[in-house]
Amino acid sequence: MGLMRVVRNRPLSDGVFELELSAPPEVLGAAPGTFLHVAVGGGVFLRRPFSIHRTDPQDGTAAVAYAVRGEGTRVLSQTKPDTVLDVLGPLGSGYSLPEGARRVLLVGGGMGAAPLLHAAQFLKGRADCDAVLGFASASYAFALDRFEACCRSLRAVTDDGSLGVKCSACDAAARLIETERPDAVWACGPEGMYRAMQGLGCFRNLVCQVSLEERMGCGVGACLTCSCRVRAGEGWEYRRVCADGPVFPLGEVVFGG
Amino acid sequence: MVDRPSLAVEVCGVPMKNPCIAASGTFGFGEEYQRYFPLHKLGAICVKGLTLEPRQGNPPPRIAETPSGMLNSVGLQNPGVRAFLRDHLPRLADSGTAVIANIAGNTAEEYCKIAAMLSKSRVDMLELNISCPNVKEGGVAFGTRPESVLEITRRVKTESGGKPLAVKLSPNTSDIGETALAAREGGADAISLINTITGMAVDVKNMRPVLANVTGGLSGPAIRPVALRMVYEAARAVTIPVIGMGGIMSGEDAAAFLLCGARAFMVGTATVVSPTACVHIVAELERYLKEQGIGDVNALVGALKA
Image (cartoon, rainbow over the protein chains, first blue to last red):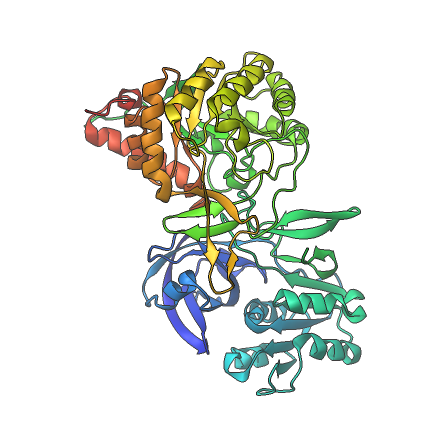
């Protein structure tokens, strides 16, 4: 927990920004998939959680990527360099590399690409990493050059065909699983993507971890507001996205209803 | 200037090293906050509302930001009183701070059973939650009518085996003084107020309520003026100790509640925003006392000038 200085805050693509912060060692060494809980200021009351997008230990900076969706992200998008923000983190439980895993496939949908770049950075020297990133349209794609620098291969696809093949990240990833046989999948995207993945056998048959999102309060596991449903016994139980996650095994998450 | 003002208070026989209590529902059972500060810095911890059986709570989204505040509809998710006694209380009771158990139920019998189980435990005080707006049965249903407040307080007091009983009052009532009197008549040793104010938020883009539960409890600075007024009125109506809460974010906010007659105060939503809020508020309150030349925090209680 502490005060972090804004180094840069710039647009990456249509409506997507990157906030670069001067970060302490615990953030620079954070596990992939963990997040920062940011008091954005400007009269916004609650903190906003953002997964770590990338770190640069040499520069001493860490960045989050965010889409402008509501008041919190709108205020954040107007934050100037040298502003000092009150930031909590790194928080949560992130992606974990299964023992002996040598090949990881990253699957991102839209803003879900954000934590996967940090994941790709983490995997360098630990495992081979391929990335499949899906976007609604080419104008929303971001950080592709950075992914290319960190991954063995990158496949970008779009819903409208304006970039790469016209298909979903889930379908593109399913095809890649057949040829590349990864040991694990680390995914981040919207609920629809996860539901589609749950429906395909190829994702069920390997270690597949997904990052969830929910409206959040304290970020440390106490207020019990950011709940998600996880299989337990014959049924399910609520777990805390902030503290038990945000990363959960795909097969354990119960969506909808 | 006063060198070191005394912050110690006593609430119905329970000594507290300062008047700052972590409010129920925002502090869990304390575990999550130990990495941020030692729990003995708090006057007391009021634990997450306990029910007889474990509760799953309401579906998400359970939280929404509002102007200067937030709405929540957690719905009393908790592991149940037995799990609390077995898994959480032993460590909490050794943490060097007073422990208040917030209890909730669907029926008077449930409240009584929980109180009886806690009466033999190491908790220092019970807080009767008859003001939760987020559950279908019980909760606030007991807390809005004076006659039902009196009845439930009387029954639970009988079961609490000498443990001090604070009754947490709902602001969703027409006359808070009358409700406070009813709690006292029922045998309450203290009252705490205010719980959240029922409210809602609408996502106009999707034309849906933000909360899956539709309505929730409003808290934070948005409700502070209402809370101050109700604490003021309740403290004038009864002589038993009043624990004030509602949007306290700073030491000066806390001082305002004490001036209005609160013997101690609870901090909830501020902790949701910042895990160390309570310790900052205590430090600010101490600074305020020094600046005001007041040597003992108890001198503030009810000292509001006409």
